[in-house]
Structures are given as structure tokens and as C-alpha cells.
Image (cartoon, rainbow, N blue to C red; front, side, top):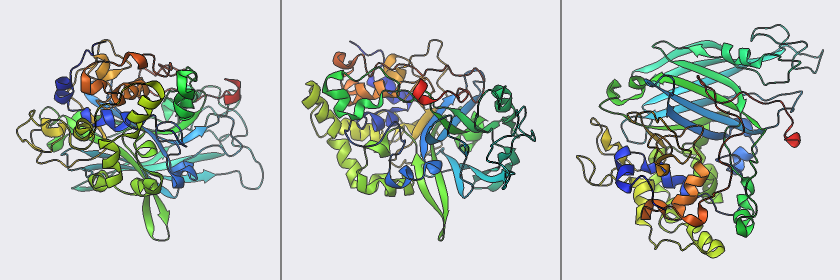
Length: 460
């Protein structure tokens, strides 16, 4: 089965760095769950500070803007009261942008939260009547936030008293949750928007992959094991020029995106969580380095020998060969080194060397190998989006950023088996995990991610 997008097309897109970062990691047998849910010992015990997914895509209804979403708090059971889910008021939540390719943040958007709890010693209730607006007196617990933007020019406050959309308690308590969601979207100076609040868990896959690769014979596929859960989302919709190097998205269209959480400790704020591409820390980094990986920035990635070794001789490819008879590509996997750590732009830009796709940025210098979610903002919107993204002939999809509908699991299954290397899809993996879409459709407007559900997970 021929791929509709060649390796050279991947290079031209400037997005190859994201493709194999998850592809060589997906099928490692062990503990953990989807994307980067519960990926490290520290965050597994501290879910409010656990990044679960990052999305970055050109806004479908406003193509002059980019939407960035960062999700937190995995596996929120909708009926998990009476103390429903909330952001950590002792932490700083960040979405970071690298626009010049040095693997350091050029722009940091940061949320800080504060609690308003009026329950006191009189009631256990989250609300004591129907909640019809974010400022309804019946809502007894709410969170407010401050949003700042930090660049080399300093820090600017964008929102000083925003309100988080509350957890969706149920139809009696919140008869029109869509209205509460809409009220939680705040306009920003310059034409952007932001959102903070609960959402549906939009990532989709069959998590029984951890049972020795779907039971060893693909017998355990077809069940979306994240169906029914919620998460907490931070969202931004921003003009492209606001994110681009030197404010020029036409000349410098490629950005790197990742999210972090800094938690307060006796030593001050300490970074405890980090996420760019899905699955990297969860399944690439060995257990003894997972917390350390969460604590560093992308600029230090190339100095982790354990990660480099997993790239050149990926365990997953050997597992696929032993379990399913899919011959592993020969090692060392120099193709994966190029894609994951250095990029494959050797003949694709003005500078030849260990450069990744950001040579597309005309004003960028030498670039540092690093892991982050990369987005080429100049790729036109797809008229017919494919869930398989680039390998499905849709250059606007994953690994060119990540959209809510991109099937990163099936894309990754193909890549680890050598599809990006050979130019052919692996027929034995054509069905993937048989979970091809989220159970809820995405919205037509920002923040796009579906509304949180209220049905108990064990009823789904």
C-alpha cells in the first residue's frame, strides 16, 4: 500500500520531528496509560499537575490564527464529587513557544489560579441550586485566574480576573453547560482568545496495548478506553504573527510548542511536568529518568543518552517483530535519529548540518535538537482532513502539529514499523487499534474540544 506523502514531503513540511517521537514509543509493554497520562512516578501521584495532551493547529474557522490546547488531570470521572476537579492553586501552568529553534521558550503564556470556596462548614455541596452563569450565587466553589505573557521584552498581564468553567456536575445543577463554557472564553488584546475549564477527554485509543501489545494477536482492540472521562483544558487562540519569529509568520512559519507545570515547593517553583509530543516521556524515557525528564526543558534533550539509545535501537520495533512477525528495520536507526533529534532538513535549507525543519524560518540560525510539538503555520487548511495526517496525504495533520481528530496511535503504529522509512504503509497494521475517532465530535468554534460529559464511565 503506497503512502500518498513521500519522505521529501515530510521534510518540506517541516514537521518530521514529531512523527517518530511517539512512533517508536507507542507499543512498549509496561505500566502507564494514554498519551502522557500518569507517565511518571511523581505526576502519577499528583494528577492536578499532570499534562495529558498538547494540541497545536491552525484554527479551522479562523485560519489567520493558531489554536493551542493543553490538557491536565487525567481520568476525571464525571461523578467524582463532592470535591470536583480543579487546577492547582499552588502551581503555575504554562504553554511555551519556541520560534527560533534553539529549544528555549521565546514566549511563555502562564496561568495562576486562586480558589473561591464559600462552602465553609455549612454544606458539602459544590452548588446549592441550578447554575446558569459563571457568577451565579448557587455556585459555591469557583476558580479565578491570571494569565500573563512573557517574552524578551518582559511580562504582560493579559487577563487579571478570569473565571474557570466549573466541573460539569450534571443537568440538574448545570442545565445549560454550553452557556457556561461560552462565558469562560475571554477575549485578548490583539484579537486572541483564551479558555480555562473542564472538557471532554478528546484523546482516543484502546489502552489494552499495554497487555503485551493487544494480547499478542490484536484480540484486544476496538474499545475506546478513554470514553466518558473528562480533563481540564487551557486554551489559546492567537494570531499567527504573535507566535512567529520577529512577528512574521509568512517568513518564519514554524513554531515549537510544549506545556509545563511549575509547582510551589520550599525551594520555590519547581517544574514537575512537561509535555510536547504524545507518549514521549511515558514510553521512551526509562523509569529512573521520567521525573528528571519532566523537570528539564527541550534544550537539554540531546544530552539524555538513554533517549538517544532508544532512538537508534528502538525496543518497540523488536517487539513488533517478535510478537507479530513484522520485520524490524535494520539498526542503527539513523532515520529515527534524524527525525526525532536533528530533523531531516540536510538538503532542504540554506544551512547543512544537524538542523531540523525550522530551516523554513528564514530568520533562524543554527537549531538545537529537541523534543516538542512542531507546527508549520503556513500549511493550508485541508479540504478533506485525514485522521492519518501526513501519512494519510493530509499535510495539515499530525505530525504537523496535532489536531483533535488526528489518530496519533495509528500513525505511530505505522511509523514504528518503518512506514516513514520505506514509503509504504504496513498492511499488517492497517486496522490499527480500531478506534478511529473520539466518541464526541469537536466543536466548530474555539476552544473546539467537546464539552465535558456527566455520564458515569461505568455506564458507557
